[in-house]
Length: 438
Length: 196
Figure 1 (cartoon, rainbow over the protein chains, first blue to last red):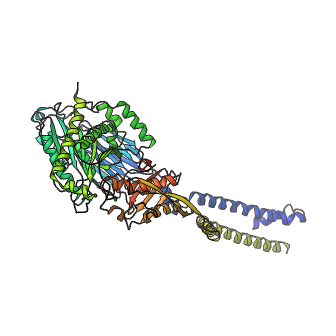
Figure 2 (cartoon, rainbow over the protein chains, first blue to last red):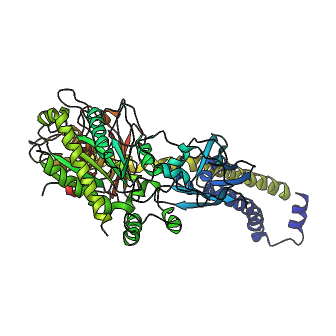
């Protein structure tokens, strides 16, 4: 105040200016203070108060950090993330694919590593998810996983099968026939030292002698998942198992085929497990057996399905690529192809085999028409879960309608079931003949 | 004397300005928030009022139900009240659940409720149904296909901005309704199941 007064007095300004200038000065000070406060307030309110920081933080892209450590017997991969992530583990050939459902994006931070099991770790993006692809040198690996929340950490323990004994990823499939010559084959591509091998391990993932085809039969439903139900109480799961067993019997009469069943008793088998059985056994064809159901009790007839894809633009482009590049039945995917394959979801494995699947469907449906007195409903496409993950030609046969009282009786009859098995068998051999002709 | 007067005046002016400043700060801190809430609440409120004062406008939609004779989906016209996209899409699914008014067959199992429906900006409609939709004796491939595509096709056919449909059960993703059709990916329409 003192200084203000002195300044006001010397030199004394003209009286008519006096008041204005004083107010001006005070005003200008306050305006300055006010302006800085106001501007800072505006800045704070537009950028969000620190209290409101939570939604802003959620927008940041989650990061996963990956480290690899080798011990003498195993490789440990640690995946840690800032936030909890939903994930899904799937083994595919020589890789483990971890699907993350991350909607806001995902970033990968990996520290450089050298490992005798893990060859590479990459992040790929599919339309609905992010895929972390951990590539090992050999398809003969097993892994165990353990996860922790808050903070998220997924620990994967990798072992090559001829190094250790853990076999957690092995499905509990039943193998009908094994070729004895298979035990003598050496593992190609496995960089680990040779060791004694348990015969069970040899069954899956090993190339078989040419000519022996593996047919995976999938009896639909099972256990508490009974499927459709007929008026007289017939359950779809019972019919499918009965027909599958008859088909297996029929096929096993021929030396050139071996049969693997996804279930041979009344148990629940998850749909992706059924596909895994086919893939782990390097199936040549996959046949899912079902009995149809509809709200219309007069719906009748037999039909054969192969997979339709909910093709988005991106998927359609990939499909076009594979349609142009997929070879004949014998021409399985090679090492280089896998680099392309890893860009597509495991769930889309079937997309590569659509052409062959449609041919197989045609052969089987033709035989059903010849052998059964049912109405021909033809070949159809549908997005069936059980077919989606199968990495070989795959079809789903709807024998007849269990919801139609007339057809329900047929489905119960042993004779009819035997005829169905015969028809499917003939369809199959017709399809294989097509590819075996010189 | 003159100085004293000015001193008092100065003080008074400063006090007034201080009060104004405090008031302004308070407005900034609290008024801002109120305004935001108002902004969020206002459009819905005004629309409702408009809807009530004006007569409820109806809009024709096409629903797809099952035909007893050929097993294909057949169209049935229906009037629903005009609303926003989510509201109209919800009405379409609710009408599908209610069932047909002509000689066609309902496809969705009885007692199924529509729990929630919303459409994302890029045209993916999430349809969340109650668990009753999974409880049916007729769930063979054909039965499941009819349920899925009556919903998917009815939504995409009536609303151009809906490109894909994802089905949820009790708010969760589920593999299938009854062991066949894959629900884990969004559906694009398949009009081949519709009678021509």
